[in-house]
Length: 401
Image 1 (cartoon, rainbow, N blue to C red):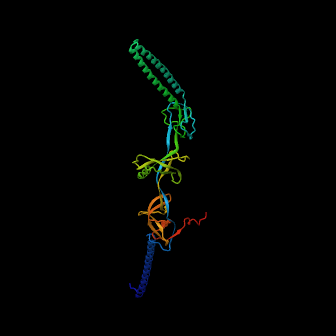
Image 2 (cartoon, helix red, strand yellow; image 1 turned 120 degrees about the horizontal axis):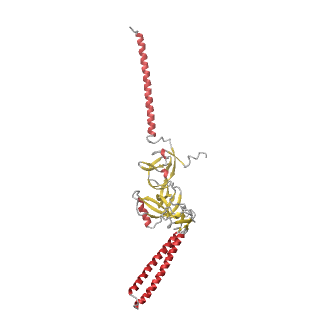
Image 3 (cartoon, helix red, strand yellow; image 1 turned 45 degrees about the vertical axis):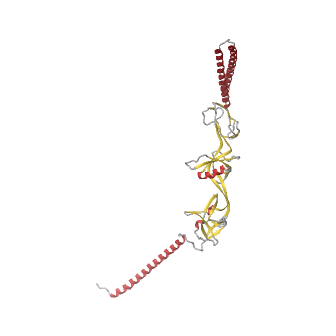
């Protein structure tokens, strides 16, 4: 088979042209990929790497100026309201309850009648003891008279001395019997008095556990009712043992430390009192010591067994640098704030924190009064970020209610 030379000459130029076009497309695709990668690298390098953003892009923030203020220093603990006195009113004699005159929840005075037990059996016992005492007193008087007569007769040698001495010993026996009878009378009188169950102190009476007609016994554990003294009232709360030296120093110096009782959310002040004392030992399992504070509780805002947050005012720091707590940022390197510069950029400033109170934080070192710090929008900032400072509430000023 033979080929024509003219056909071969036409095929060679066409193949060269196809190869050239393919090369151009490959080069163009490579250039496009390189440009796209370069654009992504530049964008990520600017935004994700934490470098300074474009000067034209400013971050809207809210900033306030640091100022001087007073910060109270508290020692806090979760406490339990405890009545100054608590007593379960129990019966000391057995019998049937005939009267329960108190009203549940009332304030009862010391000595007020709380329950009456049928006294008939105890009155009879007292009467018997009194009768026996009267009889034995008469026998004693007779024995003494006889001894006086025997004493005269023995001096006249009319009777033997032994007869006189026996009469003397009989007098001593009756004297002992009379003392025994007097004890029985007193015991019967005491038991009769126990049939009237009275309030041991002035306080609030709780719900009654017995009704008229019930039989009560000295072995009962529930008793008649529970009475508590809640005016004044105490709060017992634990604090860390490292706070004890400062507290004891002030207590030993005779200082009166104010104590505030707040609700569980620590938003509402319930009552104000003073620190009474500290416990005599530290709980080794928790590393805390219990403190007791006393409150007048004239309005009955504190109730026994109520949980409150108690805090002791140790001192008040005067004229310290304070900022809103929202201005303080935290990182592995420590605490810092974003300070707004005059050129509308921010600088990262490391600060040393002092005590705080609610939404206010004191700054011990790193910031001066008058310097503006960012309190909102800090999550978008870096060192040297350009900012646009807005006044508080500016974001919501344009919204319709």
